[in-house]
Length: 217
Picture: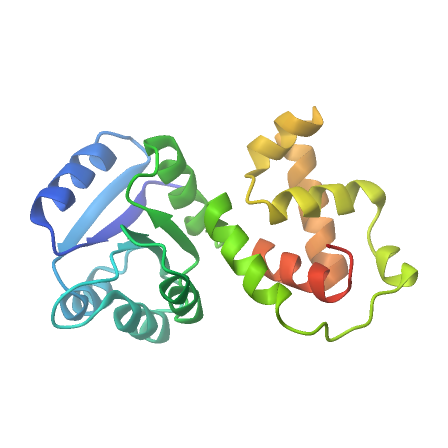
């Protein structure tokens, strides 16, 4: 993969300038454009075709949730990472429902931000543990579509269940590898098997499906 093309969307000019300086300093990223509101973001996304959009939520003219929905509709291959100050439950869920592939707060570390951009460019969900906890809590309030049974647990191997439970806490592949004393490549292989066995496309869907089947508590 070459340099990841990124569009920055935030109504705070100073924040955008700082973020652009931070990202452009890396050889693997290229900031191709900046937008100060959601309407401008939709226009630039269609024009510039970035791989990843870093999207604020509370902006004038058109908010980030509506902009995310429009961009995902017009350019499905463009991935949206929400980058905002707020982690209100409703905004988290609305952002994800609109099609965002990740949700970050502006106090996130630079290393986590880089990791999230790479994950988004690969089409992988990226949620911080605090956000993952909100998502899991929300789904925990919903009734299971499939009753829990020992047979459901046999869908995955013990190691796969262990990894899925760590994914549900919001850990990255690297962090899971460090915790289990295995390689990151091994974690990726296990995750590929988990997605295949559960017939889902990404980590978040795997966690939701694992909860529905009773594999996750």
